[in-house]
Image 1 (cartoon, one colour):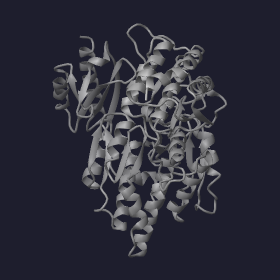
Image 2 (cartoon, rainbow, N blue to C red):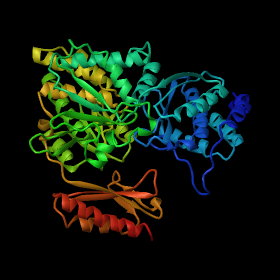
Image 3 (cartoon, rainbow, N blue to C red):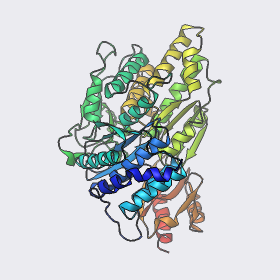
Image 4 (spheres, rainbow, N blue to C red):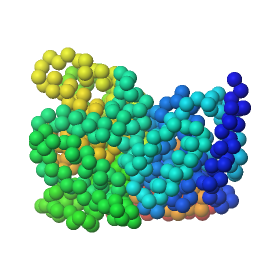
Length: 553
């Protein structure tokens, strides 16, 4: 079959439509780059990118026999003036790495005709029949720029003759859910009903089963970053009858989506993590259990103010990871499956050293460190029967293998306690959104665990003491000279830089530090931790000076 000839059938349509959604040329030497967040930048640069991503998404669908591919338009925790476009693969996972290269080439093509040339080459090389059916489903967050980008995306799908479904405003995890649900509909591994309502019903049913009559731990205040998570969480709560969960009381705050300029402004999970304090609005009541989502509801951060000491305590992704691993480990023990199912935790170099020690020494679970980026953690977590992964920023989930899911449902219980443990594990398998980190799903998981343990946030915080740490941004002449190894924990280049960092680390107790280039800015991030806050700060400053010096050579 001559695949290259078939491409010409759509080539003229793609060129004609593309001219209405042109790419904004960058300065000489600069390129658009597809990263973990897809293409993310100022929204006024993205219209042409959204069009070309649409063309590629349709081609990706055809390469996989017409399976549905997702496109999410969001900039997550970024300011309202930004936006982004990313592709979601059939099981709700991140785009395959090889196709990230194709996306980068597509978007950086110098003309519309060159886009078609690359399209033709890909179809020929990958033996894709461009007349086969294609399906793309998409959603967007609450940013005003989303409408323009959706218009460009639709134009691309029409030009490339792809079927599409516009789910309009969604959280990012909802879009990932819908992609997987669409591709598994009617199969033995159906992920759920193919609708937004199906998402709510699945989580609500699993939450009720997992709570098992346990008492909800008092009022929970949820800051939704004035993003899409606000209205979606409020809608979800309608599916939890008050008589089904004892004492449930969720207060949704910072849910104003009518003023787009305040999206992620002085609120949200990223604000709490980077500022290490609560959002100023609403004023945090001492003792009140609180958490924050980010703008597209895929990150989660818990926190409170101790009413006795007035000190602020933050429970981040590391804490959620260790809490989940501990609870699931206890359930596996009760279910008689601890030795049968291989359980592990995946972290990045930014994970606090105290959390790693707690998981390996107290929970007796293996920890694997990967480069920064959820796609790296997700891939490694799939190697376990139960893989727990969270970045320190609160983005993460728990993955259960098909073997583990089957074990929860098919193991014949020998006691009431074993029966309860197996039922709770099965409920967690449905409650946790395994396609991607989902702040609403993860929040429900935390609440289930706290209810089962009858813990307050103080109890949770007491499991271990974080090592003081500091993160510093250092502007450099060329970030690309900083190359890393060992899951980004050591510098390979420039020569001599890592040796100088090692020498500084040796001067402090319980210390470690690393530097890595930013994925989006011409800068490096320096992370340092040590036995005391002053030592961590001093170490960070010393390593920052080293990076600054090497960055100007």
